[in-house]
Image (cartoon, rainbow, N blue to C red; front, side, top):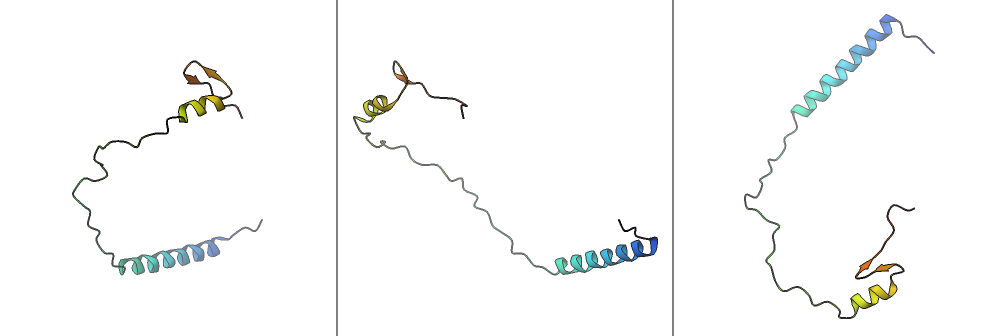
Amino acid sequence: MNEINEQKRAEIQKQARQILESFSKALAKVKLEKKEFKKETGGFREEEQGLKSDAGFRERMFENAPNKSGDNIVAEKKKW
């Protein structure tokens, strides 16, 4: 591996400081628009009648299920 002498190390640090200073000056010139946030709470929906489900759906699901136990479908867990 190539060793860096002290003079080269000081030069690299000086260049790094110059880069950081010029970057911070450029960032200081950036103007950002302020975002306004809604003050009202949203995301709630009114309760209504739900959709009517297919009458035969439950029977078809149980017919297709390989393992059943009463009114429950027995499924695999963490078996890859």
